[in-house]
Every structure is written in C-alpha cells, then in structure tokens.
Length: 401
Image 1 (cartoon, one colour):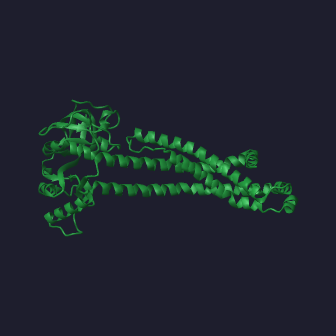
Image 2 (cartoon, helix red, strand yellow):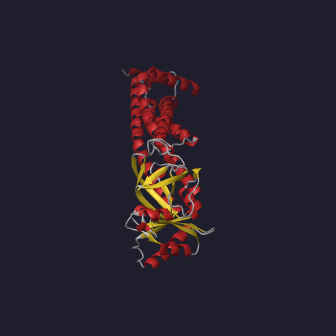
Image 3 (spheres, one colour):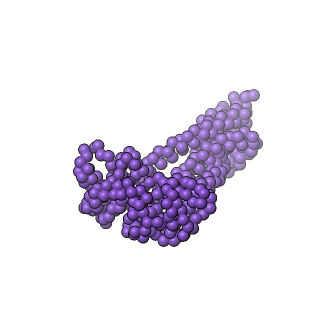
C-alpha cells in the first residue's frame, strides 16, 4: 500500500511540473547556502586544529595589550625577557622583533612585515609559526645580510611579478639582503609575505629596536599547564614592571587560550551566516506549505473519490506528506550538489588569492545532515495541508467545484 502511495505522490508532483520545480528551487537555494557556509566553517575549524597540533599547545605569548604584537608604542625589554626565562615552568623564551618595511626587488616596491629573532631558537620559532624550510637553509647566528622569505615569494605575481630564488638579492629599506631560504606556506597572503632576519640583522637595520622586542614567545616545560603558567608569568612581569593589577599594559596568553578565542569568534560568525542562510530555508518552507495547500484545494474532489472507495484519513495524509517530503528532499539533494560546486569554486578562488587556509571540507555527516534536514523541512511544511486533506468529508469533497 505504501508503495502505491509513493507512486501516486510522484505522479502528482510530475503532473504539476512548473509549480513543483519552482518549489524545489526555493528549498534548493536555502540548502545550497547552508551547505556551502557550513563546509567553509568546518574547513576553518580543521585548519585551526591543525595549527594547534603543529604549533603545540605548550606555547605562551607576551605582547602589548590592545595594540598587540604589531604596536610601536609598546615593547618588551631585554630585562623583561630575562624575567620570563627565569619563571619556574618556562623551558625557553624568545624575543621577536617585528617591523613594517619597504621591500624592493628590481624596480618593484612592496611593503610587508619583517621579523627578527635569535637563530639559535630557529626550531622553536618555526614550530610556533607552524612553518619549516622548504628551499635553501635557515639563518645562522651572526648573519647580517641574509634573509629567509615567505612562501609567496616562490610564485609569480604573489608579491613580485616573478618568483625569487635562493641566492638572489632583495632590498629592505634600501639595504641589500641575500635570500638563503624559503619557508612553507602558512595560509594567508600577509603571513606568507613575511621576511625573516636574525636578531643582529634586525638591530643593524633598526638600531633603535635593540633589546626592545615586539613580543615574546615562550614554551612551557613538560607537564606544566600553559594556562596556569600564563597567569604566573603575567604576575611576575607585572611585578617586574611595577604595574597595578588589572591595569597592565601587556597580556600573557597561552596558545590554547588564543585558539579558543579565535574559535569562538569563528563559531559566532558561522552561526550568524548560517542563520542568514536559514532565512531562505524558512521562505522555502512557506513556499512548500503554499504549494501543498493549493494542491489540496485543486484535488478536493479527487480526495472525495479516494475516500468513497475506501481510502483512510491516514492514507490521504500520507500522500501529501510524501509529496512535500519528496519536494524537500529533491531540493535538498540539488542544493547539496550546487553547494559543493559553489564551496569548491570558492575554495579554489581563495587558494589562488593566497588564502589556502580557507578551504571547505565535505564530511559525510554534513551531506547526510543537509539531506535529512531538507526532507524534514519538506515534511514539516506539509503537515498542516496534509491534515486538512485527511479531514475532508467524502460527500462535501465530491460536491466541491
């Protein structure tokens, strides 16, 4: 019997092709938007998790409050760095210089960040930034005219018109530097255009920054909770600087806390975007309901005939629920396919623009969830029209014109 109801429902949908098509399109648009947005949200979450695993949750960052690591009004002195190094539970700490500089190659001029740190801690710095050397070599202690450059310098038109190579010269604030290596891709155009110098090279280029670090990266010893350690470091630095509690000019944050903050922001953005997309799903739901109410009115006499030959109320109800469910599921499946195309295309465009971190993922749970969601939307939208149809009285239905 259910098989016959399914065939009958499909027949009625195909019999009213244009109306059914328009209703399918409405649910398709909503599911497409939801699928694409959620796939990007999941992709960003995966990227964040990968960064956390690669960089390690045992890291701490000391930087200026408010203006952050890029501020020129705040700096961390060598004395403060030594205080951090001596805090119990800190395995090592590295000061990092950072400046926005003029870069010149041939006749092209660009402006990007340059960073300088002690080459003795190259492994720790690279681990913290989630990078490694992909071409050439790392910097050595005492090197003044050498640099390691970001991943985008390997490609044409990412920073300069043509790719750079190991051994070539690049000018920083009109001073020549030889490229000795390239680091791996981070995933966004700004970070992948960074230039890395030794601390001594940075101090030669900017004598005024000597012993005035933009931020400090530290590593917790094995078995030490970095979140608790961050509070301890904060207390020690505050006392060293003689600042009042709650009015510090700096902040100490564990990597895990930074990841949580970033994840929370991303989650909020994703929820807002999905809620916006759900507006179109709600509109689609109203369209399905309207379509089914119209179908009930058009087929009132038909319902009367079915009831007069023995059809039960539940049979009539099921016919309309099946129809609305098929419409919802069909729109959902097409929406998933188009959402995949849209998200994949968007990911390719983002990667071409240098945002390789902004890539969607398509787990089976997302596909199944969107399909079931579209089916549920269809059936829920058809409940009231189906109930109305099932309550038709045979005699009155047969008289309906």
